[in-house]
Length: 252
Length: 81
Image (cartoon, rainbow over all chains, first blue to last red; front, side, top):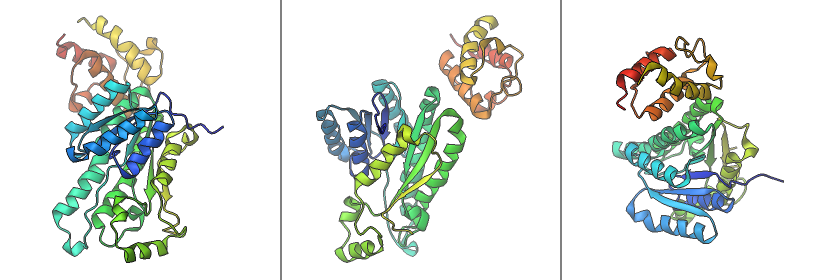
C-alpha cells in the first residue's frame, strides 16, 4: 500500500489557478487535502474560481485567495485567511513563476527585477511566513518549483535562470535551518512542460526543443504534480534539500 | 502581573518548545546552556510568548533575553494586559 493520503492536511499552492499549479491543486484535492489556491491578480480570478469549483464538485475542499507573492502584507493576509479556514498549513508549494525573456544585452533592469521579485522573493516571502505556522505544528513539507534552466542556464533567460538557481540554494538553506523541526524542503526542477508558456512557441522552436529531450515528448503538468505529491507524502519523510529533475532527460 | 504568575504561564510553553520537563525551567536557567535551546529554539519560544502575551518582542531585545528570568522581566515590564 502506497500512502498518498492527505486527509486532514492543508496545502497552499502559489499560482495555483492554472498550469502546473492547478494540476498540483487538483491532485492534492483528489488525495484528500484541503487546498488553498493562490492567484496573483483580479484577472486570474475566474481561473482560480473554476479550479475551486471543480475541486468542490469532486468532493474536495478548497478556497481561492488573491495575493501577489511579492507583497509581504498580501502574503500575510492570505495565510491568515487560510489558517482561519483550515486551521493550519502543512504543505507549501511555491509554484508562482513568470518569465520575461530577452538576450542579456537587451534585457532591461525592470525585466530582471520583475522575474527575481516574483520567482525568488515571492518564494522567500511565502516560505518565511508559512514556516512559522509549520514550526508551531512541528510538521511541514515545502516544495519549491524551480526549473532545469536554474541548473543549466539558458539563452535569453538570464533573469529566469538566476531566479530558479536562487530557489535551489534558498531551499537547501531552509532544509538545513528547519530539519530539526520535522520540516523538509525540496525542489522540483521541471524541463519543458506543456503549458501556456510552451503552447505559444513557434513550431520550429518546439521541434528544436523536442530534439534535445531524451524521452521524445514534452512533459505534462501531471509529471510534476506526481513528484510534488510524493515529496509531500510520508514516502519522502527522509528526503530534504534535494533537487528532483523532471525533464524527460533534457539535461543529461 | 507578578513574576510567579508569568513563570507559571511561560513554563509549559518553554518546556513544550524544547521538549523538556517543566520542572527544569527555573528563573536562573539559561536557554542555551541549561535548557539546550538552539538559535531556532529561541526564536520559537519568543514567537510563542509573543502570542501568549499579545506583545511584540523586537529581535534586538530578544537576543538579550538569555535566561528565563530576564525573559520574564521583559514581559513584566512590557505586558499591557
